[in-house]
Structure formats: structure tokens, C-alpha cells
Amino acid sequence: MANERVKSVGGYFMRLLGGVAVIVGLLGLFAVLAQGNLIGVVLSIIFIVGGAILLKRSGDRSGPGRREKRPA
Image 1 (cartoon, one colour):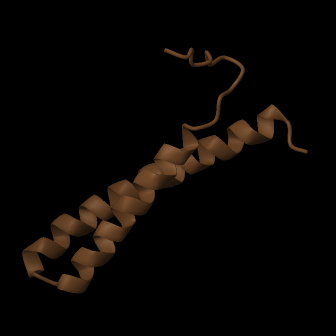
Image 2: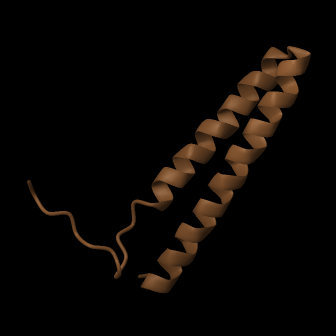
């Protein structure tokens, strides 16, 4: 069973990796659009979507400093 510190380190790593993937995907997309390479465009979009998914999943953890959501 992992403690909170390990979970937060994993969340930070996912956030870092997701941010890097989105930035690399955007840079690749702009570089490939100038050339018109369809495979490069698809790979860039995969990087952007994958990075966005990692960023979203890294924020799902509720830590000790986070408030709980109240039902409406």
C-alpha cells in the first residue's frame, strides 16, 4: 500500500510528462504542417491527446489539502 507521498510524486511525474508531451506535440505539429506530412500530423495529434490525458489524470487525485465536493 502506497502512502500519500508516493501518490503525489506519481501525480507530479504524470503532470510533468503530460506537459512535455503536449509541448512536443505542438512543436511537432507546427513543424510538420509546413511540410504537409500527414503521418507527422497524426503523430503530433497523438502526442497532444496523450499529454492531455496524462494531465487530466494527474489532477484526479484528492490530496489532504483538497476540499471534497459537496452534493448540489
